[in-house]
Length: 262
Image (cartoon, rainbow, N blue to C red; front, side, top):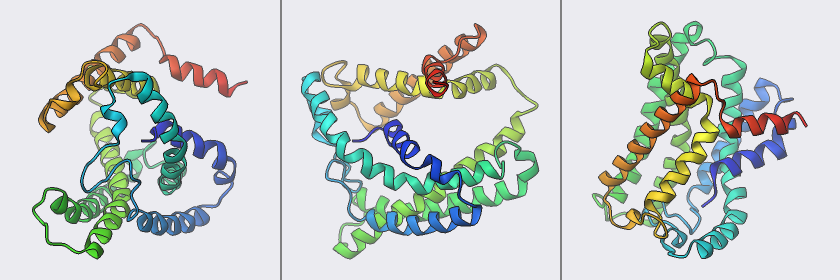
């Protein structure tokens, strides 16, 4: 499957110059049109990952790291452009959020954030119900039309969930602004080094789960994978806090800033 950093990087290279010159009205119109298209394309999930049957691509099962790396390289050549197109509506929505500074000054936009959180999370949850019923095998006697509709609804409503969670985080920031304890500061430090720790977490997941490393991926349950995820996140928060106390920036954030000034 494609890597999220590669997808956003491709969007930035191809469209950043165009998007920043668009008016708010143009962004809204284009985002709505693309949401419709992306929702329709959600019925044609790439073969590497079936959202309904939860079957991951075979490269996750390869025992040879060289073979897995070569296979993924060819996968990324296809999936990165495909995923990038699906993410463009989210990028445009994020630009609007930034322009209106909803997250920069959440206290000023509290009412809007509350409405966005409630509505966005409701739409996202409701839109995921048909797919959840199918994937859990609770609903088995459905037609192909229902399956395609469920996939499209799942894809489309997911963007509303992104807006809802973003708004909820903004509301949490209001509560935590005056109550910054050790844990809050540590999480902030992690966010300030998000790129570096995204890569660090990916490395840990490979080290723990990949068949050519720790090999736990094929032997643990959903609960086990959740425990691994929480463990990796906690380790990340601790290390980020240590770096913050020593005034050390994330290495990849530093590299990105150097490249952007060239």
